Length: 217
Image (cartoon, rainbow, N blue to C red; front, top):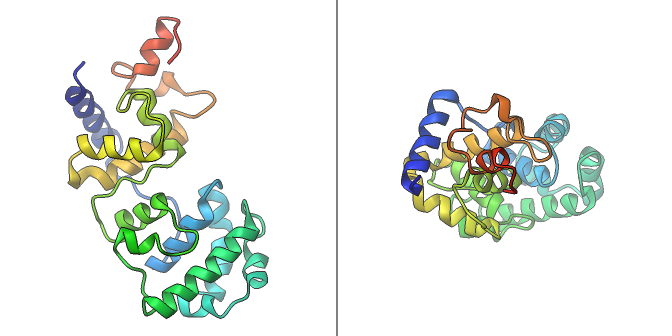
């Protein structure tokens, strides 16, 4: 199957099977989404959603969080992964937002990456979800699912995966496709044991075809 045909089949399947695809993180503002995404690194959205209500009640925006100490933030987020470094990053990014950006989360991906604790994936998530920009954040789910299906082949880094997906997915679908791939990876194409029996992409999936032949994907 040609690459263009594969992408067309995959995107059409997701559009029909998952017409609504959104982030599962809970937030009430661009700042709160930014904080939630920083907290979600190597942590589940479910766990993040358990700690953010109290965190956001105490520190609803950058100006409030900028006045907090790392220890105060730690008390709210201690149950997430890497709470020490995330506490440090959240206080620092809140202060930079207050001091350099007037308390407003910037829409520009390069500007977002200036913030402590904000890498390319986090910046792309904020750009795509909050500002509806044609961005493709690549997390472990997107990286794995894209490679398994065959949307990317032997991609070694998240950036190379991002570039390949952006090349083949129409700009107006990029943000939604990001959620499609994440949710598919989270609930169907799971890391340890993909649920191929309940997947509607087996007819075009490189991984499934390889398993049927007894090979290695």
